[in-house]
Each structure stands twice: as structure tokens, then as C-alpha cells.
Length: 320
Image (tube, rainbow, N blue to C red; front, side, top):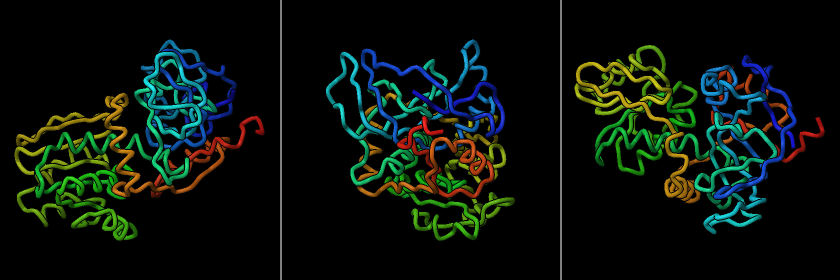
């Protein structure tokens, strides 16, 4: 089979078509024929070498990719019977594992990380759900606010930020979110109760609405220490890129990683159901042939993408 990988870390240009052995599903595993893969910022971090220490000793090519949508084409021994060959599914993997990530024509996945795709969605739409929805769910668990309390979300127009808003509203929280003028309507449609301008001074603008500061903030914009200015004494800052503080004024800093919950089948199914009933919006910015992965990464680096770019693996890479 073929995939998209890299033999050295660098810019988008290091991504190229590679030959890979076709994997077989082992005990408790499922093989998925890949139809679509969402392009996430974590893929770019992987490509650029941000995970190099976790790949030490591995033989390239290294295969990026976390999210995947496709069809089950092989069940390993001792699977639990939830899924059958031919089922449309979505799954998530940690790309630093020995088998690599999801940029490949076939992917073998721990069955706990595979669930049925949301009904009524395309493969491309379905592929955009799990990584960012899991991260948003974990962020809201870490904030740990009660219904009616106020949470702030930065990076609100992004996929993670959008899911954080929608999941917060499902928990009956009040949401302050940031947005550029072009994204104001989008962020309000996602459910934000109040919107402030993003960029320099965003914490001052949040304080303008809540002079005492918010009880919790989910930092999808990676403001890190800067975000604490918007938070009340003793509040909570949730980060999604690993920044862990130190805090100040009694503010607790909680880094969250979606990788920690990839085998929580119950959570993955719950998020799938929320996408199926429309609580979570699946936003596809564009679909590109898988062979154009480098161009997708270039577009991601250029910013301004609303929704996820998706790589289409239904067109054979053998045609490259």
C-alpha cells in the first residue's frame, strides 16, 4: 500500500508518497480502509520535528495523522463484536506509535479507538470530529464549572474552539469567546453569548465584560501566560499545547492532551452521537487529494482556515 510520509523533518515540502507494508489486524485490532483524513495542527508539529524525541530509534518514513474516517475491512481476533467488515467508522491514533499515523491507504487501530461514523455525514465531514472534540471535552472537564457559570474560549473560530463553545453550551455554561470581525457571526452561531475582538488586548476586553475575571478559560489561541490576565483569582486556565505554567494569583494551569482519551470508547461514541444530533458542527474547509498533502500543510500554515482541510484517500495514490 501507499501513504504520505516523511524521511526528514521540515516544512510541508518534506511530505511525499511512500510505499508501506499493508498491515494486518492483530488481537483486539481493526483495519480500516482509509477514505478521509483531517489535517490538524498536530500533524504539522509532527512533520516539523516537534515529536522527534518520541520517534527516536524508529526507521523512517514517519507517517503523520491522527483522525481518520473509512470502512472496516478486517477484524482481528478477539474483537468485541461492536463493528463488522463494511461498517463506516471514524477513529483516532497516536502517530508516534510504531505503525505511525493515519496518512495511509490502510490503518490498523486499537478497536477501543474506533466507533461508527455519525449517520448522515460524508467521510470528509466525519474525519474532522474526534481529535478536537475529545480535546474540547477534556478541557471542559478540567475547567469543571457548574451550569450557569462563565467560561471564556480563545481561538473560538477554530475547530477546537468551536467544539469547546458547543460543548460548553450543552453543559449550560455561559460563554465569552474571541473572534475577528470576519468570524463574529460564525462564533455567535456556534453559541457564544458574548464576543470580543481577538488579538492584542483580548484579555482586557474580557475583563471589560467581567471586571473580576472569568472563573475558567480554555486557551485555544495558545496565549499561555498572557491568558491569565482574563482569569479571576483562584480560577482555572486550560491549555492544549502542553504549556503548564507557572500560574499566578492562585490560578491553576491544566494542560490537556486528547491522546490520553483515545481508548475511551464511551467518550468517542458520546461525541459521535453529539455530531449526529447536530450539537457538534462538522466543518470542512476544503477536500484535497491525499497526494496534495504538502499543499494542505502549506495552506494550514498560512492561517485563516475555518473548519478542517481534509485529505481524500479514495483516489489511489498509485496514480501519482
